Structures are given as C-alpha cells and as structure tokens.
Length: 130
Image (cartoon, rainbow, N blue to C red; front, top):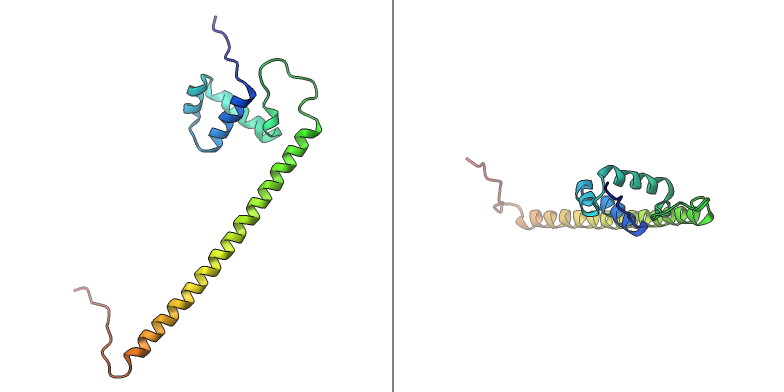
C-alpha cells in the first residue's frame, strides 16, 4: 500500500503562490507529487480563509481557524489591496497627465512647422504611394 504524501503548511502556501503567479497546476502537482485536485482544494481554502486556512499535517485543532488572527489577516490583506489599487490609480493619473502634456507639445511643434513654411513656400506633402 502506498503511503500518503505529507505536505507542510509552508509547502502548501508556496504551491498556492505558484498557482497565483500563473504556473500550471500540472507542473506544481508534479513537483509536490500530489494530485492536481488537491492544489485546487488548497486554493479554495485560501480564498475562503486566507493563508492561515492551510494547515500542516496531523489532526486539526478545534477552533484554530475561527480565531481573531484569521480575521485580522483578511483585513490586512484587504487594506494592502486597497493601498495597491490607490497607488496604481495615482500612477495612471500621472501617466495620463504626461500623455496630455506631450500631445499638446506635439500640436505646438506641428503648428510652428506649418507657420515657418510661410506663404508661397513649398510644403512637403504626403506621397501618393503610386
């Protein structure tokens, strides 16, 4: 009879992290020598209860997943996500301002080029591509 593979909580967290990073479930399962379905179970546990929901080998302790550390971990993850979103929105705003500035500068350059050609001067035109 085949002995079950014992996976530590840290290994489970690492596997879930690899899945979140985009690595294929088959590759991660092959590395850990577990069935792919087990990875998806761990991923669901993390979605429902955070990383603390993944437990190591052995019998589960009663009430270990319902305590305050779990709630605080979820709140900390949410706060970190909100900070990251705010940071990215600020960055997008800065980039939009830069784009607006360069568009306006390009308009000024084109207007000066047309004015410098002056009346009666030859202007370059697009080729007809014939």
